[in-house]
Amino acid sequence: MDYYKESLKLHELNRGKLAITSKVPLKNKDDLSLAYTPGVAQPCLEIKNCPEDIYRYTAKGNMVAVVTDGSAVLGLGNIGAKASLPVMEGKAVLFKEFGGIDAIPICIETQNPEEIICIIKNISTGFGGINLEDISAPRCFEIEEKLQSQLDIPVFHDDQHGTAIVTSAALINALKVVGKNLQDSKVVINGAGAAGVAIAKMLLSLGITDLLLCNRSGILCGDRPDILDSERLKIAKRTNPKMRRGSLADAVKGADIFIGVSGPGVLTGEMIETMNQDSVIFAMSNPEPEVLPEIAIMAGAKVIGTGRSDYPNQINNVLAFPGLFKGALSVRAKKITETMKAAAAYAIAGMVKNEELSADYIIPSPLRKDVADAVAAAVADAWRKEGEPDAVSD
Image 1 (cartoon, rainbow, N blue to C red):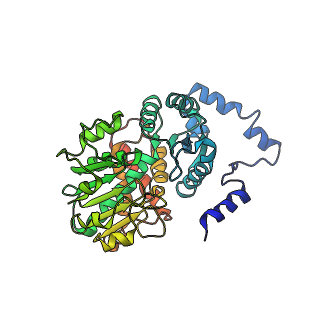
Image 2: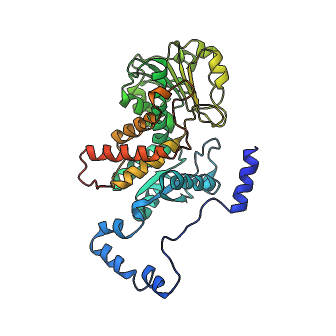
């Protein structure tokens, strides 16, 4: 199938992918009086008297805003707000299909961080969570951090944390297949954008100690003068403990794990041959990976994952964000914590039983709808265990 051609037909035929449906009937005057005037005045007054009742009388508790400025759309770059709408509609469809969550796409016609923060803050009342999408680094770090500090609902940049969660889940199982552990493994991440930085942070929190992060100029080091923004500088100082320098080829020598969130063809078979035996390769650039799986296998890699559905081990964010938000919304979490992210990763990994694990099966299919419920349960439990006083029961 020509997916590009057929997708264009689908979008044109249906005029997009979303529609709003009512939860209540409107068949007679009583229905109208209950759903709208005069009856609607009563829940308004209840919420006025007790603002927390907004969760009781409205859809806020199951509503997420999918917000973008269109500055970093996967595989397409800075295409702007209008052109990003089909992607945001798609994200909303995935929220509904896999998590049962209602989501509204919001495409903002500015790429000024302060304006984006102000807009999202001022529309947040109707939403139980904010999913930031396809916003370029380093602006995405500032936008997420400031919004989370100013709002009492979860603010989650999926390109960062969703990618980190699913990558971590896949890595947990991949290391079981090759008989290695997190603490002793040497990791190289190529791509120091939003996803690469978030993956690095999460792997450090899970126990990785020997980690190198690379960009186009080579290995990141805390004293490199070309690292200008604060987030990359901070992660550079937390990684590369031996202050190594050099290119990606230098970085992967003796490494156990390569994680690519960069661009096509940057990892060669010759580079993989210099890695440790039974190496793990996650080449997640789309649509063309950093190295084709068949080349990686020939070079000696044991486990290969990509972002594509036509190869085994598709590392896809849909395994994380629907369940993550479902769990967070169920307990009215005010934020997504590191503990919740780790719980989500282990829940995803746990969907593949030890007896099922193989080099070609380290992570569940993105189409498995039971994954979201498992992730939701783990995330809600993690929030409760952190002792949050505002957590509510399911």
